[in-house]
Amino acid sequence: MSHFAYRNGVLCAENLPLTEIAQRFGTPTYVYSKAALLENYAAYANACKKHGRDDKTALVCYSVKSNSNLAVLNLLARQGSGFDIVSGGELLRVLAAGGDPRKVIFSGVGKSRDEMRLALSHDILCFNVESVAELHRLNEVAGELGKRAPISLRVNPNVDPKTHPYISTGLKENKFGVAFEEALDIYRTAAKLAHIHVTGIDCHIGSQLLDDAPLLEALDKLIELVDTLTDEGIAIHHLDIGGGIGIVYDQDKPVAVGDYLGRLFTRIDGWRAARHGNAPITVLFEPGRSIVGNAGILLTEVQYLKHGETKNFAIVDAAMNDLMRPAMYEAWHGVQAVRQREGSPNTYDVVGPVCESGDWLARSRSLNIEQGDLLAILSAGAYGMTMSSNYNTRGRAAEVIVDGSEMHLVRPRELPEQLFAQEKLLA
Ligand code: LLP
Image (cartoon, rainbow, N blue to C red; front, side, top):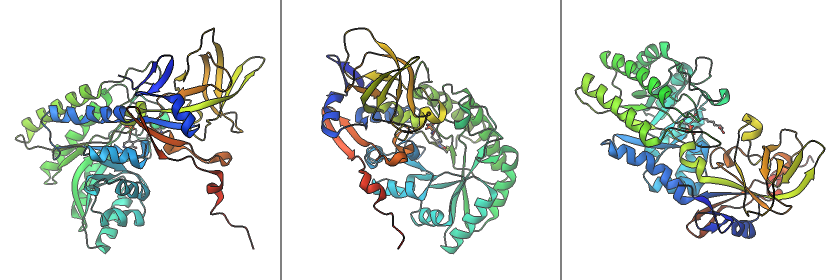
């Protein structure tokens, strides 16, 4: 069920008309539905439970990069969620939001020494190591702190996720992970390092996957490797299948999370029964978009309507700096007028005020609007605010969470003065 729906001709977030949010906090503003967020998380948690997993044998590690607002992280932490981070900054956010560092996994190809120290000092669950050089650096840093770093190797299963090339990560030509063929040797090396403790195996093949077949194919390759490692006496306690399940932007028909997890657990259970005397293996997930993507919209106001010779433009107060996805990936986001009007629509390109031709949010949309109307850019909860910038010295948007009929400002709009407050003139 969508938590953004029309009531009496006005688009609402849960029970709250979006017009009230614009009136109180202005635009552009990201609006998230608490109920949608919790429902999307529950799809993972319930599927784990249904397949006999408890919090020791399955862990959802929400991918912080998709939406890192502290209130979002806190709501998920309260559900028992773990977190997938890619920087020291994200770890500090998780801690500030009350997340448990022992449920944190650290992905990313370029971890610095400082980031490793920070993560080790908080005893995170696991480092997802992405290269041999990183493995040696981690061994060194852990040694300096007198610790053993728990690691997984991020293995690149060379499976085609059939998604946008910019968000496909598991192919040979991608910068992520270690090649499947090299993984065994690197595990052997890792097992000999004094300050490394091999605990798991990891992969993440891409994002916005509509079908789970590539994920199950990747799983089969991990299983093969775990068997080889077990035969060599290298114990693997957890298997991390990454994130990647897609959401509805346009006509997309993503696999239901429960169905995907059902197939995944069935395969894992069959394998453990056949090869490992039913010894359990903990399963980790790193979902981002499927938890928060459809739980958020970007609320914006039409500043001007411009009727050109070949095109009509709706110039709105949100721009590419607020929502990068259209400019960066030609991503499609639904656009809805917050107040439905009588009469016939026009076709518009919805564009922002930034000085770039790439500054568009939607193209050729049929909209019945007038200057001053509000628009909702849909499916903007993931990789919206987190990828925003201050280009054109634009303060970033406000963020609001709606809970029933209540609105909570969880990040105020940035003021232009704040953007240059730290800058210094030459003497
Ligand atoms: N784990 C790792 C290691 C990742 O790199 C990612 C996303 C995730 C988990 C979460 O994937 P998800 O469940 O959200 O698909 N900015 C792009 C998406 C980039 C995804 C990067 N990695 C976009 O706006 O579509």
